[in-house]
Length: 482
Image (tube, rainbow, N blue to C red; front, top):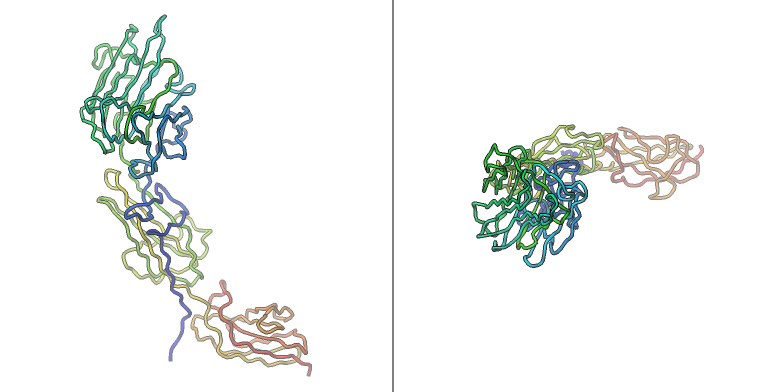
């Protein structure tokens, strides 16, 4: 003797690897990118360069748009040789700017009220960028700005330049900081560390209008300090930054290599946050995965990931029947661990949540490379093995055997006037199919005498979610007046 619980079709879906991941239902600080081993992965996205509405940012270049665009809208961009590349060597975002010495660079022309757009007195500022030099030759120029300003009744030339000399970057501010006397000034800051080719480094040049401190840092390490004051020390009379007539600010006009995430702020920054990823990590919520019926259940979820030292990730799953009423935290999430086989994760829908954690420095990300989800979809139970029809006056009495499935909770009775076409409507019990409930017989009255009717029965196991499964064999009967 044996019992049958129902048809259980085992199904599996794979995400990642050579397959794509579904677009997220919700995510935070994550992105789908080719990653470890060339696989399609979920990984942390780098921190955004510019948040709209940040008034301290005067200009920003991320190189991540389809065309090279200054993101605040304060500057127009002229491309004189800059190119975009994919994130093969990029450090932040999707792309970096690629330049070749002798082919020109980018020119930023400031609009009215921008730092370099109008003549006038200026205050604190910070210029930061990521740089990847390929040759580090003397004379290479990374930043160049040349113009003139009025000094009494004469014009005085002025410039700012960041250039390579003796394998070090040297910053020159000529007649940019103005003393009360109005005399010419020239301040030069030179890096202590040599510029190493084929390496990404984060550069910051910053000025404090309240102390006169001008500082150059690479990767958070101080390279040089000057006090732009009457004494050359802290406490002297502070010289004032002043911009002359509007002139383009040239980015990499004579440089071979990559530059990324250029930001100019109208504030002094005392320390640098050079982490690539948000320290809080990120999350990915999948779209609902439809499992078939309310009796379907998740069996197993396996995942593979590339986890550089210090990084980690967690996977969660939840199931239910009405996905449109779900919130971020309800229904409750179940933690996915190893090769666990689940028995109580049932429902029409399933959803996956992945939490990703960066390392302690915020510069490494885990990469979720593959995920496999296996579930059992329980189909409608088997139909009755036997069915009988007995004609009466304007009615037909049907009787059938039990479905062999113990999960059966009711039966649907189909009827019609053509074999295999069960579209009857005239029966007093309602149109086809009739929900007979969990019984083994049904009398359909209100039928036309002399008309041959055809009948079949199917079983279901969910009153609220019943759908037609396999039909029984067909029987027929002709009601007659007695």
